[in-house]
Image: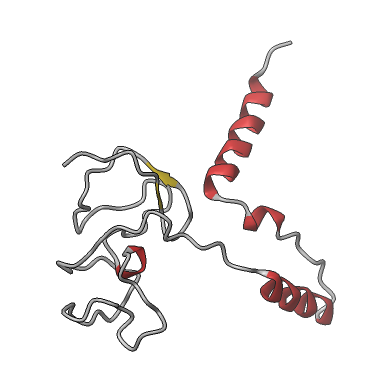
Length: 132
């Protein structure tokens, strides 16, 4: 079965995944960050609030929800990506840097997606070789 018209995002980096065959193979990876795609965290049945993190009663328990598995009940969640709030981590890093007298690093680059970082790097590279 070929990929349908739904837009699928990587659960880890949020990259839009195109040209994928559904259902995912156990070996399918994100082309941007190489995260396993046939993983619990990328499934519609993923429920981190439950003891075994799965809403499917018949599914076997999986130890690492971010690694590929052989679950027969896997259903791709096209919107599995959730942008994480980094405010607390940023504040903690700033406090540590201040404590040790170091310069506080800007986290704006760390918070951008790998695709945005790649686009920025490509633009910088192109500006080096542009002839005027």
